[in-house]
Length: 223
Image (cartoon, rainbow, N blue to C red; front, side, top):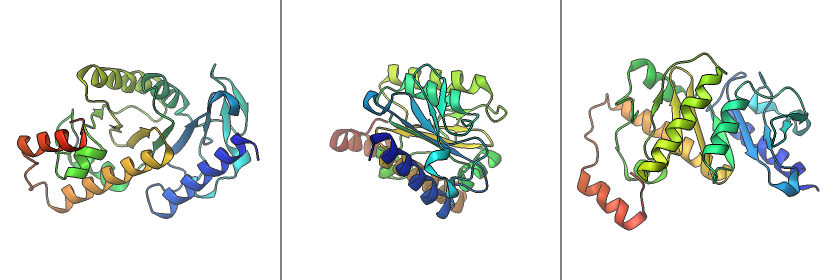
Protein backbone atom coordinates (compact mmCIF):
# COMPACT_ATOMS: atom_id res chain seq x y z
CA UNK A 1 0.00 0.00 0.00
CA UNK A 2 1.25 3.50 -0.88
CA UNK A 3 2.60 5.57 2.02
CA UNK A 4 -0.05 8.27 1.61
CA UNK A 5 -2.78 5.63 1.70
CA UNK A 6 -1.50 4.41 5.05
CA UNK A 7 -1.39 7.97 6.38
CA UNK A 8 -4.97 8.55 5.22
CA UNK A 9 -6.08 5.51 7.21
CA UNK A 10 -4.09 6.69 10.21
CA UNK A 11 -5.70 10.13 10.12
CA UNK A 12 -9.17 8.57 9.99
CA UNK A 13 -8.28 6.37 12.97
CA UNK A 14 -7.18 9.44 14.96
CA UNK A 15 -10.42 11.24 14.15
CA UNK A 16 -12.53 8.28 15.18
CA UNK A 17 -10.62 7.91 18.46
CA UNK A 18 -11.06 11.59 19.34
CA UNK A 19 -14.76 11.46 18.47
CA UNK A 20 -15.47 8.29 20.43
CA UNK A 21 -13.73 9.68 23.53
CA UNK A 22 -15.59 12.98 23.40
CA UNK A 23 -12.75 15.31 22.44
CA UNK A 24 -14.74 16.40 19.37
CA UNK A 25 -18.43 16.43 18.55
CA UNK A 26 -20.67 17.01 15.51
CA UNK A 27 -18.51 18.62 12.81
CA UNK A 28 -16.16 20.46 15.18
CA UNK A 29 -12.39 20.08 14.96
CA UNK A 30 -9.80 19.21 12.34
CA UNK A 31 -6.60 17.21 11.95
CA UNK A 32 -3.68 17.33 9.55
CA UNK A 33 -0.53 15.34 8.88
CA UNK A 34 2.59 16.70 7.21
CA UNK A 35 3.66 14.60 4.21
CA UNK A 36 7.26 13.93 3.26
CA UNK A 37 8.37 14.10 -0.37
CA UNK A 38 8.00 10.34 -1.04
CA UNK A 39 4.32 10.64 -0.06
CA UNK A 40 3.73 13.65 -2.29
CA UNK A 41 4.73 16.48 0.07
CA UNK A 42 2.35 19.07 1.47
CA UNK A 43 -0.27 18.02 4.02
CA UNK A 44 -3.32 15.82 4.44
CA UNK A 45 -6.14 17.62 6.23
CA UNK A 46 -9.72 16.82 7.16
CA UNK A 47 -12.48 18.39 5.03
CA UNK A 48 -14.46 21.42 6.16
CA UNK A 49 -17.61 20.58 8.14
CA UNK A 50 -16.73 16.87 8.35
CA UNK A 51 -17.46 14.71 11.40
CA UNK A 52 -14.11 13.36 12.59
CA UNK A 53 -15.75 10.17 13.81
CA UNK A 54 -16.91 9.09 10.36
CA UNK A 55 -14.12 10.02 7.96
CA UNK A 56 -13.30 8.01 4.84
CA UNK A 57 -9.71 8.04 3.53
CA UNK A 58 -10.73 9.35 0.10
CA UNK A 59 -12.49 12.36 1.70
CA UNK A 60 -9.26 13.80 3.07
CA UNK A 61 -7.88 16.84 1.29
CA UNK A 62 -4.34 16.62 -0.06
CA UNK A 63 -2.80 20.10 -0.27
CA UNK A 64 0.61 20.41 -1.92
CA UNK A 65 3.58 22.40 -0.64
CA UNK A 66 2.38 25.50 -2.52
CA UNK A 67 -1.03 25.37 -0.82
CA UNK A 68 -2.93 24.06 -3.85
CA UNK A 69 -5.49 21.33 -3.19
CA UNK A 70 -4.74 18.23 -5.25
CA UNK A 71 -7.45 15.78 -4.19
CA UNK A 72 -10.27 15.06 -1.75
CA UNK A 73 -13.13 17.20 -0.48
CA UNK A 74 -12.70 20.91 0.26
CA UNK A 75 -10.03 21.37 2.92
CA UNK A 76 -10.85 22.59 6.41
CA UNK A 77 -11.31 26.36 6.74
CA UNK A 78 -8.37 26.29 9.18
CA UNK A 79 -5.96 25.19 6.43
CA UNK A 80 -3.98 28.45 6.65
CA UNK A 81 -3.49 27.93 10.39
CA UNK A 82 -2.17 24.39 9.93
CA UNK A 83 0.23 25.49 7.19
CA UNK A 84 1.60 28.33 9.31
CA UNK A 85 2.16 26.01 12.28
CA UNK A 86 4.16 23.61 10.12
CA UNK A 87 6.22 26.51 8.79
CA UNK A 88 6.88 27.94 12.27
CA UNK A 89 7.47 24.57 14.00
CA UNK A 90 9.68 22.50 11.66
CA UNK A 91 9.53 19.38 13.86
CA UNK A 92 5.71 19.26 13.79
CA UNK A 93 4.26 16.33 11.83
CA UNK A 94 0.68 16.44 13.12
CA UNK A 95 -1.68 19.28 14.08
CA UNK A 96 -4.95 18.67 15.95
CA UNK A 97 -7.66 21.21 16.72
CA UNK A 98 -10.62 20.24 18.90
CA UNK A 99 -13.40 21.96 20.83
CA UNK A 100 -12.62 20.03 24.03
CA UNK A 101 -15.28 20.76 26.63
CA UNK A 102 -13.24 21.62 29.73
CA UNK A 103 -10.79 23.80 27.83
CA UNK A 104 -13.56 25.80 26.17
CA UNK A 105 -15.27 26.11 29.58
CA UNK A 106 -12.01 27.44 30.99
CA UNK A 107 -11.97 30.30 28.48
CA UNK A 108 -15.58 31.13 29.30
CA UNK A 109 -14.85 31.27 33.04
CA UNK A 110 -11.49 32.97 32.63
CA UNK A 111 -8.05 31.44 32.15
CA UNK A 112 -5.27 31.52 34.75
CA UNK A 113 -3.19 34.00 32.71
CA UNK A 114 -3.21 35.09 29.08
CA UNK A 115 0.30 33.70 28.56
CA UNK A 116 -0.50 30.48 30.49
CA UNK A 117 -4.10 29.31 30.45
CA UNK A 118 -3.40 26.85 33.29
CA UNK A 119 -0.93 26.88 36.18
CA UNK A 120 1.76 24.18 36.42
CA UNK A 121 -0.40 21.88 38.53
CA UNK A 122 1.16 18.48 37.85
CA UNK A 123 4.59 17.26 36.76
CA UNK A 124 3.21 15.70 33.59
CA UNK A 125 1.54 18.95 32.59
CA UNK A 126 4.89 20.71 32.90
CA UNK A 127 6.76 17.95 31.05
CA UNK A 128 4.27 16.98 28.34
CA UNK A 129 2.39 20.22 27.66
CA UNK A 130 4.31 23.27 28.87
CA UNK A 131 3.17 26.85 28.37
CA UNK A 132 -0.13 27.35 26.52
CA UNK A 133 -1.01 30.97 25.65
CA UNK A 134 -4.52 32.21 24.96
CA UNK A 135 -5.20 33.54 21.46
CA UNK A 136 -7.72 36.40 21.32
CA UNK A 137 -11.14 35.48 19.92
CA UNK A 138 -11.55 35.50 16.16
CA UNK A 139 -14.23 33.89 14.03
CA UNK A 140 -13.53 30.26 12.99
CA UNK A 141 -11.12 30.21 10.06
CA UNK A 142 -10.16 33.90 10.37
CA UNK A 143 -6.84 34.36 8.51
CA UNK A 144 -5.31 36.58 11.22
CA UNK A 145 -5.36 33.63 13.65
CA UNK A 146 -2.62 31.94 11.63
CA UNK A 147 -0.40 35.01 12.01
CA UNK A 148 -1.15 35.26 15.73
CA UNK A 149 -0.25 31.61 16.37
CA UNK A 150 2.90 31.71 14.22
CA UNK A 151 4.12 34.77 16.11
CA UNK A 152 3.51 33.02 19.45
CA UNK A 153 5.47 29.94 18.30
CA UNK A 154 8.39 32.05 17.11
CA UNK A 155 8.48 34.15 20.31
CA UNK A 156 8.45 31.04 22.51
CA UNK A 157 11.26 29.48 20.49
CA UNK A 158 13.40 32.57 21.05
CA UNK A 159 12.80 32.23 24.80
CA UNK A 160 13.88 28.59 24.73
CA UNK A 161 10.44 27.31 25.79
CA UNK A 162 8.95 25.92 22.56
CA UNK A 163 5.17 25.65 22.36
CA UNK A 164 3.25 22.45 21.81
CA UNK A 165 -0.19 24.06 21.95
CA UNK A 166 -2.20 27.26 21.95
CA UNK A 167 -5.77 27.91 23.06
CA UNK A 168 -8.23 29.70 20.80
CA UNK A 169 -10.61 31.71 22.95
CA UNK A 170 -14.13 30.18 22.94
CA UNK A 171 -13.12 27.64 20.28
CA UNK A 172 -10.63 25.15 21.66
CA UNK A 173 -7.03 23.97 21.70
CA UNK A 174 -4.66 23.57 18.78
CA UNK A 175 -1.85 21.11 19.50
CA UNK A 176 1.01 19.74 17.43
CA UNK A 177 3.91 17.35 17.73
CA UNK A 178 6.53 15.27 15.92
CA UNK A 179 4.00 12.44 15.59
CA UNK A 180 0.25 11.96 15.79
CA UNK A 181 0.72 9.94 18.98
CA UNK A 182 2.60 12.77 20.69
CA UNK A 183 0.15 15.42 19.53
CA UNK A 184 -2.75 13.36 20.90
CA UNK A 185 -0.92 12.88 24.22
CA UNK A 186 -0.44 16.64 24.52
CA UNK A 187 -4.14 17.22 23.86
CA UNK A 188 -5.17 14.58 26.40
CA UNK A 189 -2.90 15.97 29.14
CA UNK A 190 -4.05 19.53 28.43
CA UNK A 191 -7.76 18.69 28.59
CA UNK A 192 -7.30 16.55 31.71
CA UNK A 193 -5.46 19.37 33.50
CA UNK A 194 -8.23 21.83 32.60
CA UNK A 195 -10.74 19.35 34.03
CA UNK A 196 -8.76 19.03 37.26
CA UNK A 197 -8.40 22.80 37.63
CA UNK A 198 -12.13 23.37 37.18
CA UNK A 199 -13.10 20.45 39.44
CA UNK A 200 -10.88 21.84 42.20
CA UNK A 201 -12.45 25.29 41.80
CA UNK A 202 -9.10 26.84 40.86
CA UNK A 203 -7.81 26.41 44.41
CA UNK A 204 -4.71 24.13 44.18
CA UNK A 205 -1.34 25.86 44.42
CA UNK A 206 0.95 25.50 41.40
CA UNK A 207 4.15 23.51 41.64
CA UNK A 208 6.89 25.56 43.26
CA UNK A 209 9.82 26.98 41.31
CA UNK A 210 12.10 24.42 43.00
CA UNK A 211 9.84 21.58 41.89
CA UNK A 212 9.78 22.89 38.32
CA UNK A 213 13.57 23.28 38.33
CA UNK A 214 13.84 19.63 39.39
CA UNK A 215 11.68 18.60 36.39
CA UNK A 216 13.98 20.63 34.14
CA UNK A 217 17.09 18.90 35.49
CA UNK A 218 15.76 15.34 35.45
CA UNK A 219 13.47 15.36 32.41
CA UNK A 220 14.46 18.37 30.33
CA UNK A 221 11.08 20.04 30.86
CA UNK A 222 10.80 23.22 28.80
CA UNK A 223 9.02 25.44 31.29
